[in-house]
Amino acid sequence: MGPITTTHYVALSAALLLIGTIGVLTRRNIVIILMSIELILNAVNINLIAFSHYWQNVNGQIFAIFVITDAVAEAAVGLGILIALFRNKETVLADEVDLLKW
Amino acid sequence: MDALFFYLFATLVLGGAVFTVTRRSAVHSAISLIVSLIGVAGLYLLQQAEFLFAVQIVLYVGGIMVLFLFVIMLVNLDQAAKQRQFNRQWLIALVCVMAVGAELVYFMRKGASAFRLPRAPATAAVTEGNTEQIATVLFSQYLLPFEIASVLLLVAVVGSVVMAKKRI
Figure (tube, rainbow over the protein chains, first blue to last red):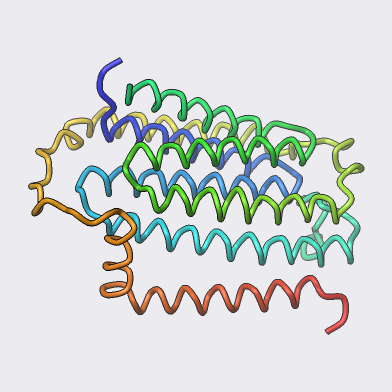
């Protein structure tokens, strides 16, 4: 095992991004789709922190803070929509919400 | 030692992520996601981002995951757990993701030399801690984005209350 370089972090972040994308594209349960979106945002953050460490510059960490803020807002609104959806349609499966399709 | 911790946390992150997207029960998924997020927090600590380590634990593990568990308890997921977990397009989605993954691997191999840049010139020895550095930059250079982010959070709070409320 050699020393850990930025490339290791970038590779890890790419793997996490792909796993999260698989979750978003293939799962039917909306709660788990939202969790997969959190995984994707964390992959972005790993990248930002890795390069912030590499350049010894805190700007990357500031961006990570903004990404976390967005993740929080997205989770809150998404779960609010999910509750409203469950009250009206009695389902949490994404492909059963097809009111606009025919 | 660094490498050992990196591989430990990477295993936590990727293992937790795989379990998150494959488990049938949403509660199991949420707990796997917590493991994954704690692994990410460990990676922050390895990279000397102590403030973000604390934020990750407090906000994600303490805040967002509790919100997720609340919603899982609020909506009845027992019925959903008995049904098909993956949608009909899962095969084509998997193929597309694999294509993107192959692209990423190709570019990372092709561009590996780009990651071996000379170290950035070390600026004058920093004496202040990570949190002070972040605070200084956040409240001077990034003050306007900070304020916009707070407005965004306010809108999100109002929006989620409006969404979740029965009768306004």
